[in-house]
Amino acid sequence: MGFSYRKSVNLGPFRVNLSKSGVGYSVGGRGFRTGVSSGGRRYTSFGLPGTGMSYRKSGGCGCLILIAAIPSTILLSRWLLTSLT
Image: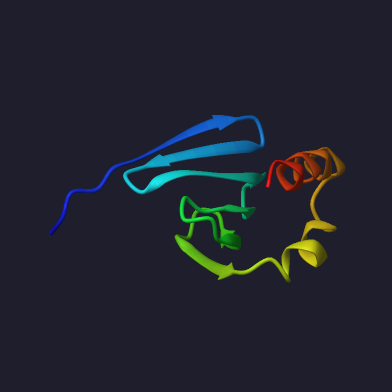
């Protein structure tokens, strides 16, 4: 088994993920998150908090539709995330 490293820094709804392969960032809350992995791939993930069950989809197509369901304070965060890429 190889060496791995991952550290997450939470800044409100933003999360910066530091790993051996690079830096990724995401925005969202419990149960929903969208972001860019350290490899540059966009993703959207859903989870049921407390169960350990989750679903993650790579690609940017579904993000725009699903983001409409999250609170308006997160929408500003989404705009910032998109403007950074």
